[in-house]
Image (cartoon, rainbow, N blue to C red; front, top):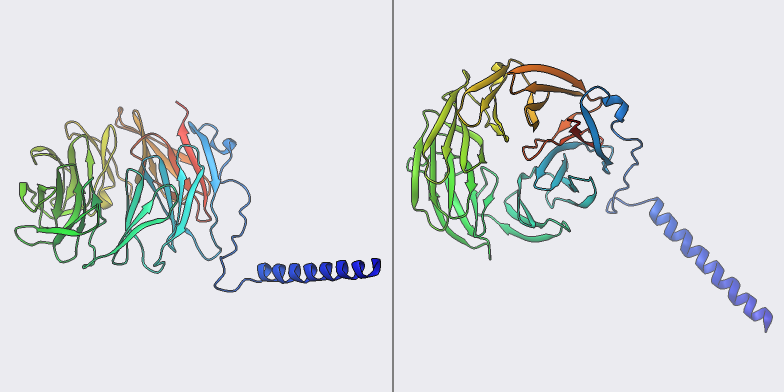
Length: 378
């Protein structure tokens, strides 16, 4: 009897050992269809010692799982979230205040770049190939994926009732948010190509490459107002304090009222502009090619300073200072009150920067997925 029990026990142990070996083999040698194994990244991007004397301090650091043949492509600030996208459309969302992980997901069409990433309440939305995709902002799960009858020319915009999608045929489609049913279309009077779209509650605005800026009713194609710039309007447009700010190929940056299209000011840059302005709390920042960067007083449109340096971009504004990315591992600090006074800060390894116009936090990363959040010490 005892011998029989021992034989049974031995048989069970052998079976468990075999199963364990099979399981180990399957996890150690994954097939191409298995989830990829993420290589570990050791060490943070920065130490506080490297920032001594810079006027910056570390708020948090994190490391994301980036594969060896993949690299971090861009970081986008959306409300309280930092959205990090790789060159294969792998999206990771972090709480931007403390760096904690929220979710990660891969696009259903990793070969095609996402067109924009927007946020509305507890939802993210983007355009993947020819689909409008809505994503739960807490779990990363798809809410809906809706096929579009056009190729989008600009990222989607939305308010509480409608999504607005500009097609490359010069028409905007308005989809009801409740069920994503197309309700109407609107186009410019001259049927020029649409360069950008913005949504408000009660109305929406679009611009064209012929220089038109048009406001229309949120729920119909009825025009509310039209503003004519001298040159084509380049994307993106910016919204702040009830105004729309945009750059035109006539060399001017404009501010107009969003509700009625009333002209507020325009500022000359001396260059044919190729991209829209960054609008922060104090200033409007316009990159103008070989003319460098121009800082414009947000209230009156007067030029505060010019930085004749190419390849710089705004990453954050703090009271009277603005922080600019100036290539790999370099940040420039400009004084908006004194009209210049640049100081250069070295941030070794940093190659990507987020644009943050909400507060003074600075987000930097390297291609391997190491991210640091910094803030001014004063």
